Amino acid sequence: MLKKYKTATNDLIILVTLSFSNISESVFRIIAKLNQYAKLHGINHCVNKRYHLVERFLWLTFVFSAFSGVFFVGNKQMERYTANPTVISLERDFRLWNGTIPALTFCYQNRFDEVKATNLIKLFWNISADDAEFPYFLNYVRMVVNASISSLNTFKRYSVDKRLEAFDMFLVARDVHPENVATISGFDPNLKLLFNKVMTEKGICFTVNSIILNSGIATNEVEKVQNQTSNQLVTCSYITNQCNMRLEISNKTVKYSFHSPYETVTEYSIFSEMGTTEEVEITLNIVETMASPILRSLSAIQRRCLFYDESISGLEGYSVSICIQKCRAEAAISLCGCKPHFYSFLNGTSCSPRALVCLEEKFWPNNLTCNCPKTCSELVYKSNSFKKSDWAIDSETSILSRDSSLRYEILAQKIRYRRDVLFSFEDLIVSFGGIASLFLGYNFWNTLEMLYYLLNAAINILSKRFQT
Image (cartoon, rainbow, N blue to C red):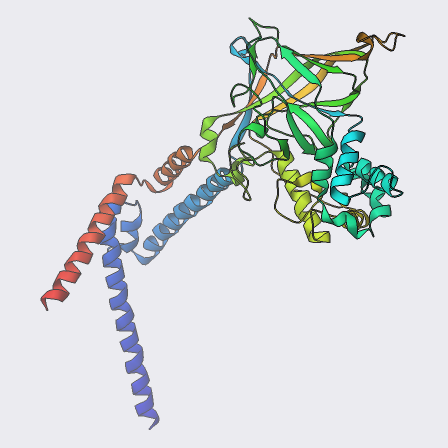
């Protein structure tokens, strides 16, 4: 019995050995045939039966090392391409450049028109000026029109009044705001610049030369006006023009801020004040970053920036300031179920005084981090010189004593930055080709020949099956 068992075991071992030998022969034969077309150096030595086993193993080690080199170096090149294949360089051919006029946003120090407020209170709540509750509502309207992100705690007094929840704060602020009394002129007498009345995180303000407000991107625009003669940037030649603008305002104290035409102001934008009798002269330096057109061939993750006309999250375009406002509005909806009236361009319920107090109690937006990628092209304006004069006169009836003006000029830049592609997809393909040629002696035509052989073999196998 034991002898029969040993015999059966030996027969099984012999059968397995023969089967493995046959399979190995078949595999080696297929590899050798494929390599006639692929022409990978070293493969023929590995499957050549005339070589000693040690010699074949040595060639196999060489081939494995070559493939390891291909994988290691190729992976490094792929990481380089997917990580951030961009570079920022300096351009100095400034004689060919044009200057870009900044956007100017200014806000009235006193945004409250008492006549308009009286009419609104009568219309919304049917409270007349001689009513006992009129001062209560008048103070509420004044708080709404002067509200900003940092003043939400002032609404605690009104948080329990249900009568105030029926009307959107945006409408209240819009309807009682005084009319614009400013005019603007510049280096080109044919250039027509008007003002966009917008709701910002600092309340209602006026913006001039804003491309983002005139390009179809949803923003907090209060009134639709034609901002300029076209949707293009307002530029000037440093050689032929003095790149200056002048804003004139009658009988108003304002706070103003310069920013990129592609951005809007936020709560943390830097504002300066200009009184009713002051004349301000400012010169500005531009820090400009251009974007190469080929940069669009990369994904947003690769280039780590977005273009102004790229659409995200339902908006028709992109800017860092709009992204931050959208992030804050969504956080407010998540915390208290509504968005403050500063963000009328987004969908969602507008906050009541009670909800604004809720946001204040939850430290919104101080505890919020918004991950907004930067833009591929940037325009940053920095003050170079500042001069302020006060032309007040004692006469209360003099027109000059109530006028103020802001003259701003951009200086010719000597350098600017350019964001470009350092390692493109074409460079990646060339790199892979060089790696394959260096380590394997392999090229594109070898691939075509091998694919041709595989296709022929598949056709032959299918034809034989159909014939049988």
